[in-house]
Image 1 (cartoon, rainbow, N blue to C red):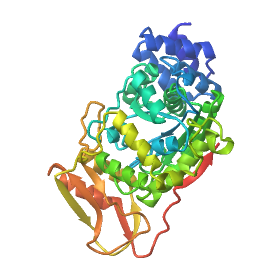
Image 2: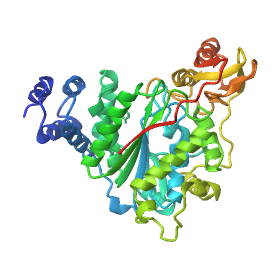
Image 3: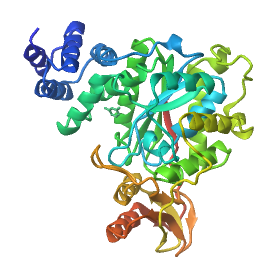
Image 4: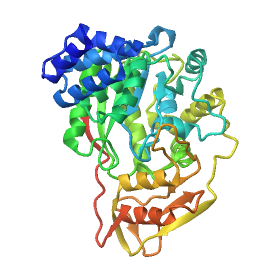
Length: 435
Ligand code: URA
């Protein structure tokens, strides 16, 4: 079938059949179908949507556009987590070793930050020497030895998504549920996992600004995962204020180390433990005791693996096998400036989007994929909603390596915080669970 006939069919609101979707994605991956025809189909999907069956077919076609890791090549039950992205979301970093310490195997292929949301790979690369581009053999060896490994998307994994994501970025077709679902799930399912937990962020610092949109995305992700034979659960979690107290790459590694030490901000700790529980549940390790990587491992609650240092030990082993050196100091910015509160009261808003924009302005993120980032900069000691504050006390600490844009930065951060005379109850962290 000619590509234009498939575009026409979707443009006119009809359902595409399985071979049409497969042919189109195969043609696009090989370069036989040009970007302009793929862009036209993406726009037709953006306007007319896809049925759950079409979304699953698109995911399947994109997943099989490259290599799909054979799950039998990796020991134990393989489970992963994916976050749709937020501000201060460093949870993957303590979570993967925690779940590995709890007996599952976590083959995690992560992404880089783009725009205001950070990326796990950029955070990990703040650790001196950490390599995110292991060969597949090294990836398998790390999984075998430690139980978790965190790498970047290789050229072999879901190449159709790599091409299509860049195209969507410049054709205004990113915010489409079937396109987001197939993009996320094709990469995750190519990792050879048995089960997956999704953290769908909702709020000012997230893709999905309101609960209805977040719920629709979470449900579509879960349905597609299930249609492809995987055990999948999604949590919808708050992203109206940043997660934890630190935003910025090295600063988020510091907070991750606190969590692995059984400390750290209450919200980051709680979400790490909740996601760990969900991952162990979908992996059926804690419920049925099956699939444990090392039969010697004792089944314990995840919190105990933070307390007894076993999760930290896994993290150190993983970092070392990735070439990282935790004995070398993390990068630190030249200037550390406190932002004083203009009045006394209670924090009633700490706007995630504004904090994300400020971190971007400092150089912690990128506006284009080719931008370089500064791992040392960011914002720490963020005050959270509901906390009391006295006039002149710090609302946060700015870590900067440049005096440029200082006025704009202060403006942004000042507007991020609101202070009210009476306490505001903090918003719930976990809004819904979709199974
Ligand atoms: N993350 C992805 O990997 N793909 C999308 O389309 C959106 C977020």
